[in-house]
Image (cartoon, rainbow, N blue to C red):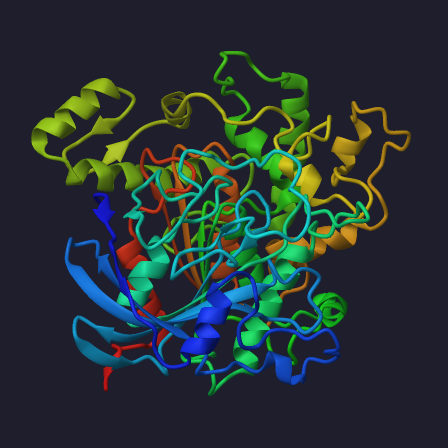
Length: 551
């Protein structure tokens, strides 16, 4: 998909102008804002005000290059809990199309796209947004500056507004690796309701010096946002039983977690603490791009995938550590007893056959699709530069070793996620109120290089891992309230994570009987989203939505 300009047009004030303008003026909260004395999820502060919007108009260029004039109602900075820790992050925006290309539409029964902008497990906010697609990392006061380096790519601008270009493969992430606004804009132009929740994230610190955004804050907040939307059925536009979550990188991980853990009781205490609405937090479908998840096993999966690839400096990582982690992955993978996707021809997936599975199920089909779309001359040029590929005129084939050489340098050192020196963003994500960074795997703690007295993980870590891992809800405690529809995407050149992670997620979901649409983008890196139009169409298909009704 070519980069397409998405232009911003004039802004007009609609019904409820007073409330809308008050909200836009800062992080002064819109309808549904919490009050200091709010004490329960049934509190009137969690009632959505249908009239408190601003009317905006924008032009969205779709993936075919056609421009669409979209007028929509915009609700800003609605606090979605009655006892917020920090309303700067615990608030959401709602965008509802009312006119598309001059025709009035009724989105009252449209799917709801719940699009998070989480990246690197950093905080995200809608406080400074001026329209759809304006959520970003941080935003507008409240709390101290986040600490700890994010692990996601930083190849794109951190801003995501309606004036941005529709991003292609590697222009789809903000500064912390979270998603930009392509999905939101295309969804709005398709007649869907768009909800953009902010969420607390790692590194936030209050005036007492305590951290308040570490795990499980991000997933608790997103669940609370879903509960707010569902509790306002009949008031908030859209079909609250057809909520589709979307996110990239860490945002993809929490999107899958949101889908896997619907209504799980292990979050009840945390949701009660912040005054979440008394409603379901189950969602209908999941969209996840390059999800970095299953963190307690991610180091092993990463080494299995990229262990023999050198860093960009040309230096090999410690191969003793790499081999240890590969062995751990082999044990874990064997215990999962996952089967390959239907039609793959693969039974149980193990460390011994996973390379061949990835080749046949994902990599070769991805390369084939890419090459088939090229002109004859461009294909000839590409194949001349990439001699590891054999092309028979219809299909691309190659070896796993050839593929690894083609991808080249690995992004992360070893261990990739639970760093011995506690330097990884994930170490920060599993910090406590008083400790910025902590180990979350036994291997990481045992090999700590920071001088910790105890060489073991702290007692609360196992529970936190369950709270943060979608595989817990799909394998250990199979959740009957999970999403049954999964859209999963990853770039073949993405070395921010292991290809095994998303493939395991896809395999487990399908093994459980869920509908899975999973593929890899050829030669694309972290944050790639080269088929956003297909995702919007997929939403309509799985939700049974036909078209925005004309008024």
